[in-house]
Amino acid sequence: MEVDSYFRIGKHHSMCQDYAVAGHRGGVPFAMLSDGCSGVVDPLEPGSPHTDFGSRFLVRAAMQRLPALVEGTLPWLPIVGDAWDMAQAAHLPKSSMDATLIAAVPVPGRRVRVCQTGDGVVAYKTQAGCIRYISTSFGENAPYYLSYLLKPQLLNGYFNHVREVTLTTNSFYPASGWGVPTVVPKPISDFPICQNIVIEEPAIVLCFSDGIESFYSGRQQVPLEQVLDQIFAFKNTRGEFLSRRCHSFLTRFCPEQGWWHADDFSAAGICLE
Amino acid sequence: MPIFADDDAQSFKSGSGFHFSGVNISGLGASEYTLVGIACDTSSSVAGFAAEIEGCLKSAIESCQRSPRADNLLLRYITFNSSIYEQHGFRPLADCHIGKYTGTVRCGGQTVLRDATANLVDSLAAYGQSLIQNDFIANGIFVVITDGCDVGSTLQVRQVVDAMKRAMQAEALESIVSILIGVNVQDTEVSQHLEALKRDAGFTQYIEAKDASPKTLAKLADFISKSVSSQSQSVGSGGPSQAIAF
Image (cartoon, rainbow over all chains, first blue to last red):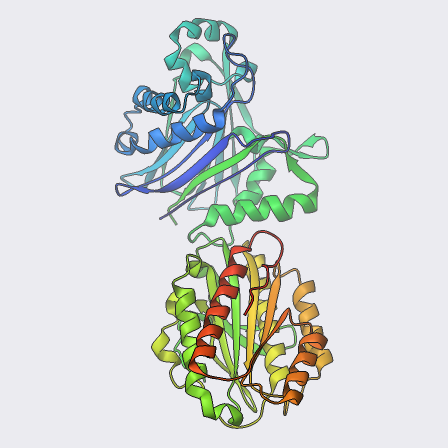
């Protein structure tokens, strides 16, 4: 089993607020990423400065809770609490914690559990060579951040402002190619703080920040399917498999094709092949 | 025949058509590598200090093995006299067992210096290209150690220059550092010959050691390992490392 991660600043950013890491801790392999907010999400504290720190703190805190993630108990309050302790030690505001968190861990039975809060894409390849993805996008460009658990007074305002979450899914079959994306809007009231996605017998599971949906060719957005085609084109899956593929894609393929990504890009993955 | 049995090696063909070996690329796990080539003169004139040269080589490799970049280095080692011998193809330093280098500097014959240089640079370019095609980042450094003028090469300097150009134009390696080392160069004519080869073939650096004393060769080993380490640290930067002073 291999785990790996990669992140890179987007063209429209002056500082990378995505973070990704993969490794083994206490015998548990993991792959995680966090996407720090760059927009205005908190009326009391305009903008979300220092989310580059917050995204790292959240990932660091989640790394301490791997057994619970494997069990699927999803300890979000302790994670955001620990991350907030780190942020306080660094004299940072709560808004520094306005960041998504996606964590993937293998679980018994050749399965992978992906826990996700906020926007992002989870994609996986099956042993038969099919690729599937689930893209989660909160309405009003305002993802539900774990930091809101620290600011309950703002939650009502958030739920009044954001009513919907959109899930987009699609599958690729070797014989027929990509299908048509299925878009399902869901009321936010029915949506969990954290998605708990269990993938049965995958070959490769990859998690991405929503930066993967910010690729453009000139001014035209590149469909997610085309980006995934490139990223899943692994030459080999040993060691730093994801770093190699993403680096080659971003530094060779994209410039050759005139593709660029506006938002920060991060990826973390587990290969069971 | 290579001195090392290499079960995981693949055969590759260089731009000029000769074959060389390298570890199977599908088994490599890092994202970036520095290809290191060492060519060691084993002509008859080296016989007087063969053991010292071998010691220098071992010391340089051991030092590289202790480098924080050791996992990102792949070493190919050839010797040359009237012919070229691939002692081992590109392989991780962890698989370069120092004891097996003993007896590799067996002297006799002429000095096909230009042929060996072209062989080494072409192998770096070809293997580097394979790495790049498989998503790796790679740069290279090669060191040619000799004690005298070219005798017996089939290639002319122009063809060495062509090999250097191929390596730079193949979009294989981010950068290549090439070092020509003259050991025990006490004759002005030999010194001028090697200086001219450095200039005409386009070596990055020419280092001359007037003797082959243990002290000088220890210094040389240190210089080689520092140059390798420096070039390895520059991989991913797009350019070559700064030259290390001897």
